[in-house]
Length: 514
Length: 105
Image (tube, rainbow over all chains, first blue to last red; front, side):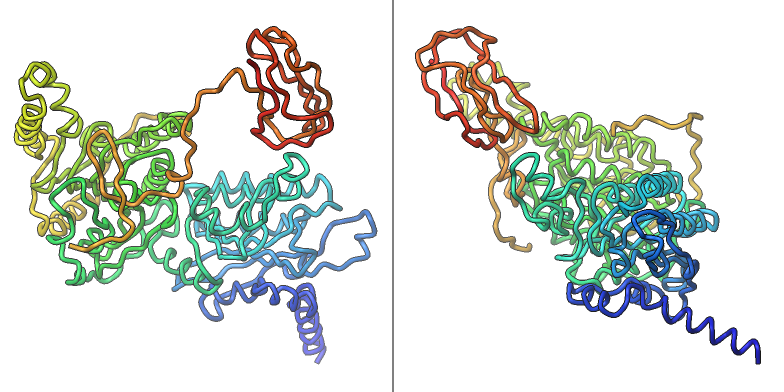
């Protein structure tokens, strides 16, 4: 009987705390189109899989009469559960409790679940919805952020870290998501910035709305801080669940394998790429023509669209794809697309995911803006990322591969394991027009009909050099293949690369051109 | 072959490519070398004082104006030897970034 009383006491205590900031605050949260922290966790995790910890934690604020206030669970929910059976550690800030502000115990709860995730080698998901530091807790609040950033960094490349921005995430708080692998945002709900509109107005006199400064669209299209954009929280949770199926639990495992499936017949690989290298096509159609079930999961869909990155499965196994996109900015490499590709290559390498690169690019983007934005340093990231990656690297040159772009896009020279080229591939130091103009300058200049001679020389150059056979004659290309043979060659090379082993020289760490 | 909408031509060294142009590319500012005869506000702020008059001869390095911004008094200096042609603001004016404040001959 005494036990029953104790259990009832537990139920009562729980019931109070499960309401977070109370009904009024919950109503306010809903009025903003947001779910509560607890609802979010339930929507994301497998049914009945959530185990909550630290429900009874109390805040540590002693000054400004804060000690008289009760803040349920100190404004953050932590625990673990599963997504499609895969274990995940999770925390969700509760905006209904003191605006989800971060104080000492709030941060201790987060770092506790982070330590747990690292120790157990499982993915960490953080749902951010917070007004920022709890000012009343002063430097303890700053210490809390610092402890979180440190753990984000130490866990980086060991366990997958996912940040979900479902409310404000401003000031120092934004650096935790920035240190994690994937950032999810939702239209009209997510807001991220270092300094908000108020400060910008005071200091610089510039007026801007929160949405235009750091809304979901801005971070998906302009800044590249977010990797996945959704219109609703539900769509966002579906994206997270799908991502979890593609990535391993930690860096010592491989992602879960699924049943293989053939690509869908509407993606006819022979009818996608036009012969003329200046004409566009959607490279995602080529990816869909080679991956299992034509199921391609794109990452950073709206940012630097001139390069496409994402996951697909080959023979049931997760494979990373990097592809130039001729449909957008002719598929050039520039500052943004280099950043986007390089980080993804490093992600794949860290988590044992082989990389397939589809090449069709005119080179690097010319421009004062590009040079002044540091395209040298940013472009070098691609070279660095491909060179240091020790996972299987397979390259298919679909059409043109000119100059520095040819080298950068997982060429043999950066140690691609297999390089294939389609018969119409043009692998050359530059485009035929440019090359002919330089090599035959004298003959063109001294000709009675310079334009005619130029045309003739361009044709001559095209005939001789704008093909895959010069590169194949040196072994830079391993095989010239028909488009219809692409999936077969990819599947075979991925299968025989599964136990690839490379010894890199010992070092503390390299110095990538960040 | 699929047909695509909103195709434009991008002129690169290697050819004229039919493709979509990004908003960043469209919105980029064409490069213009800085004109030393124009004094611009490099930051939004308030004109605290004007130290010269039209037609006054000044030398490179002379102070022309004091711009109060970000709680600092920024001395705007002359970049060429010559005469002041036009002053386009008055003491106390609030100015935005990039505004022409003064022209030299």
